[in-house]
Image (cartoon, rainbow, N blue to C red):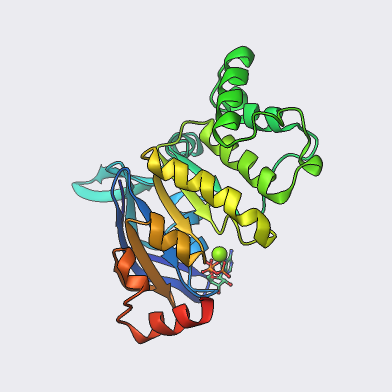
Length: 253
Ligand code: ATP
Ligand code: MG
């Protein structure tokens, strides 16, 4: 599970997250909606430790993210984890970004093998088997030796998903994975995400794809101005109660 409690984040004087609470149960899909600048990416980046919290806490599988409790002269204090300890925590999470971030000089197969070899310390033969299996899972089994420049945006994004899956994450974070794609390529990526959800993957997805949210999400969270304005089951996109959420839906639909 992911449990965020009163999460705050400031960049200098800019207070971006102002007390976000969220619980994501294992095997469920949470879709985060919200206007530009509402803090969605920042929230995902905090879970993945690409940013450091200003206040509050995030637990992944019951473990505090980025910190440990230490007893200092009889007082409970928080100590920052070492980079190595953070990397261990981060390895539980897979992240897919808006831009595909594939290594341009590597084939699809090499892109997916990279992390298992260099971070997971799996041998080359095992890494290859793993990578082929994940590429097949995203429907890219027939493009193993293609370079990113030889693939469509949708295909590149599916390779990026396979690359994240190859590290066997417990939780997948998606930050607008389809918003840089031509409209006709969006569906193939959403289909891969749909099948991951059906396989029981725990997912947090930032997207503007309301149809996907309605169909796949167990929980929908609407953020605006660094707070959760409304949250609930998928039905809330059809029956929003907060005026700000209603306005937002009118603009994206
Ligand atoms: P979008 O829908 O456009 O992706 P978002 O909801 O993901 O928006 P964030 O990217 O989380 O929004 O940004 C929230 C606010 O934090 C914005 O005002 C942004 O400019 C600011 N911000 C994000 N990262 C940084 C940073 N590293 N330094 C300073 N300000 C930042
Ligand atoms: Mg964003």
